Image (cartoon, rainbow, N blue to C red; front, side):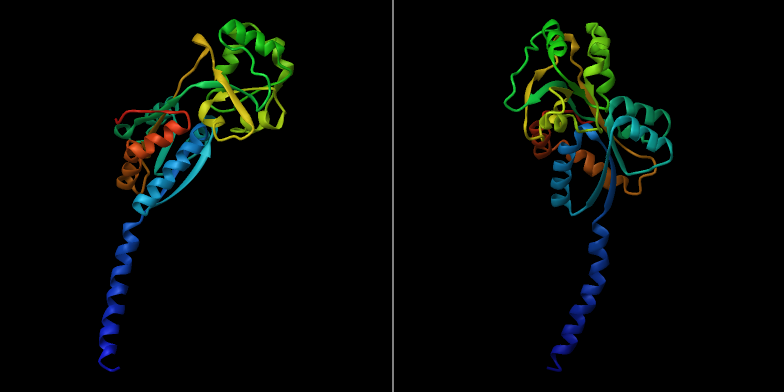
Length: 255
């Protein structure tokens, strides 16, 4: 037994010396994520954590709320946001300009409750008739909301459908449709794919469509810029690309 004690002591000492090294290898990364990419980002985050051992904390916000938060002094390691927001952050010196890269893009679609008749949206004129015939309409509060309001103006029916509009919280367009609170929902495809109880009718027709580009960047105040770059680069892997496609997004290009 006596001969074993020195060995055991040596092993314990070695473990004590090694444990800080192991802890140092795992980093904690803070991410500000676009609400429109929530499901896809969560999938990629899980893959990255399993592959690297790093821990990521993600706060999801619509574009306006994220801009307000960052302008108010909030910091993180990585920000994932619609392209126009990234460009503004770069001008304001909030992100490292050379780290900006396109992650993915997606278009806006129309959804109805599962089992409900699907309206004809094959053309702008058909979509106009569908909106006029609908009892209620809902759309997101994120980056696509302004575009849909522009669509209503272009179709000349903004005032006609005003009383039919049902608004809720950011990101719950599909949920409102599934519950029957709104007959037609319009928002980005990635927001709707994870929602049960709805069916996608199709994309906004013709030139009414709006493709949203989502980009990433490392924030100037990042405490983990190297690991942050690893996370952004991970979006270029086949596994991450498959996750993006599964949520209706087209993977972007490396910067």
